[in-house]
Image (tube, rainbow, N blue to C red; front, side, top):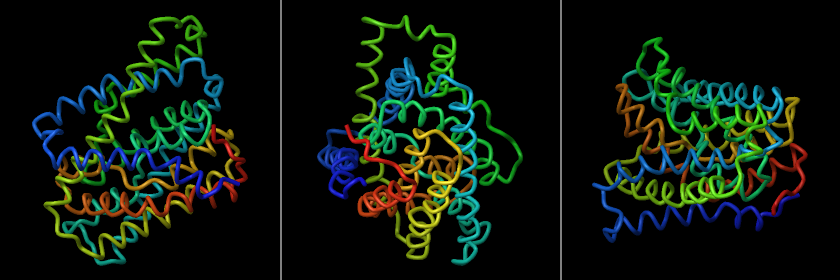
Length: 317
């Protein structure tokens, strides 16, 4: 069984980077006018290189079931979380036009990228990181189909949003693995990919901390949104995700991924979507900030208990 101390030491680095981002924003090192360019490089260059580096040569994604299950689960579990958020939003008095749709999306969608991947990488094997990258394709599908349709009230699938660097990296990496070409990508080209990818998360997480500080300063919290969002994201949705990890006939690497996903705070993507599609961005900000802060306390417990219940053995390396 993973010990609480081991879990805390594994998840602490991303949170320290968030704090460093907050401090750097406060002292003026991370300036707002640099945010867009910095995130553009991190998201479209460094992050794809990281994903490609983890997928190339990975035996965990060399067969069809190792690809289809993560994508299917990655799509269905966020949709289930959004449904829970929709019902719970009704229970706390939210309606259409007063933030129910934004609450459902922000509380139902877990962080699947910049916070989740460093934790998976620290806790489990490189194969689990490769599986998480494939799993995230399913999450992206859920975000740009169900998420956008929920917020906008339309039935339009925003497929063009899937044409981005990370998706290209995952799809391209899987094709290279399937054809065996990945075995020939070695030496300086592979090392360059690794070097670029290794900087993705320090840069992106620090910038996320700075942006969260900006957003939090402009929001007056609503306790029903904060408490409700925390219950959905950190209690109810984790139970669904952990149940999937325990009972679905999936590979061990996907079970490892799901245990970490169950522990994650809310994703920041709903803040952007709320601004683009007429939602209540303030509600998404409150859910993200509250669950991010509280998750530092809940992550060790969820991963420790979840790993034991699912039947995972310690995989720290």
